[in-house]
Image 1 (cartoon, rainbow, N blue to C red):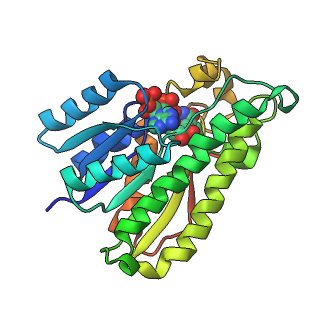
Image 2: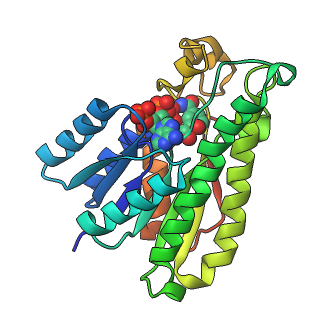
Length: 248
Ligand code: NAP
């Protein structure tokens, strides 16, 4: 029986790269997406054409009912979950804190923080030996922003990722003796569509000279770090936050 990997936000960017690499490493892969069904179905088709198993489920991670339905569909279609990547994340148009309203803060925290907590909860209920599970691994996709603060751009996003890092630390300790490892990656500036949603599609080119390696990262480079943390190669690592940022 294949190991089962769920990647939230697997239709594009880093999540799609994790799904493709996970399938290549032998996981049956489930991806969730918010709106972009065509992109999600393309990822599934590519995996299936390559001889793998994949499933796409529309589910807003910020909605508790959607998260419960997502995990039930994965149970029914793929079997017992072995790995979760909490990847779905959003940022909004660049602005200062003195311009942010409550609705924006709620949207960013609902997806990046509440969504990750809810998916982690469902994963622990399935994987933990305390609940009769066989153990597993969770990787949360944080950001270097958590420790840089993103002034003038999106302090809200940076703060949401700091919360995700604290979830990583606390949950890792909570379930370490129950067969579950919980780690995070903290990517730097990766070439995906997320920068366009912040109103800055040329961000990678604009800031690359400030990166020690003088280039943005590729989604596949983040995916390799995530797959390593999920694998038995990382069997004694939990609560770790691995930078994938071209230097600091
Ligand atoms: P992206 O290209 O914008 O893709 C975002 C993905 O998340 C899409 O699959 C999207 O689905 C999904 N999504 C968004 N909101 C969702 C929700 N409420 N429920 C379910 N799915 C949702 O982003 P990315 O750059 O690959 O980023 C992936 C993760 O890496 C995020 O957590 C981001 O914060 C983090 N990160 C990115 C960078 C970077 O430079 N790119 C750096 C550090 C950290 P649809 O396709 O349906 O919209």
